[in-house]
Image 1 (cartoon, one colour):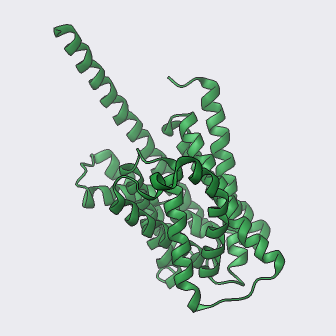
Image 2 (image 1 turned 45 degrees about the vertical axis):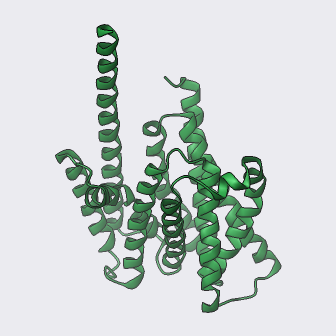
Image 3 (image 1 turned 180 degrees about the vertical axis):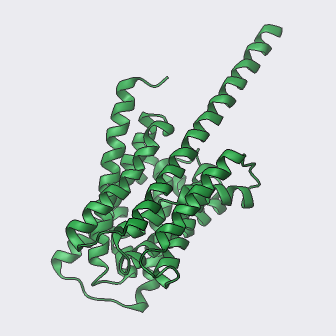
Length: 304
């Protein structure tokens, strides 16, 4: 059992990590109005790698560059880089809260992808929770009258890619955090470099510093979330990721004058409810599996 103090610390660290990610999103939305997504990806990734370099050296370059399951690592790297780039494209055209609401539907998409791609068995309760989430996505897409606009469809695509990223992360649980972050950051650097021919605006010294800060804040947010998951059970801290939507509402109104429609708020509520329900169902399934394993071990010890 994890001590209560550690769980409370994990919750606090998770909340701080989500705040950092939210600040990263605000800076990204502001900067992408002037600079191209390729620039953002390149400069933020370069700054993040500079900060990450001591950790890579401490772990060992060979161990970082030669992880287990390299093909899956490459796939995860490509998905993560594409998903991050799509996010910056979307926030340039959509309100921050709208974009974050659609991105938070990733756990719902993960249920569908796990069933279709991995052949995982999904019980009726999870399908019901996923259906609730899909209804929330439908409501979230409808309000602006741009349900099938390119930015909205890209946001939907981004949330599906984020779900694929979550599934890939499940398969790479044994990989060190530094390795996962390094590969994903390097992938973003490569994609940013590839996108540079689409446009380059010379940053001012202040904006150059902000573009670097973008990567450092995202890296710190990732490290906070990773640490929170080590301090406390995932089922304890994971629900606090939905504070993303609260920060998106606040920052969107404060910095950009955006406020979502009632339908968008209803869609966000349904998506959050579906995500929380899926977490509770996962926790219950894990508890049942744990008790069954414990009984099996007891029976084996008794027979011995």
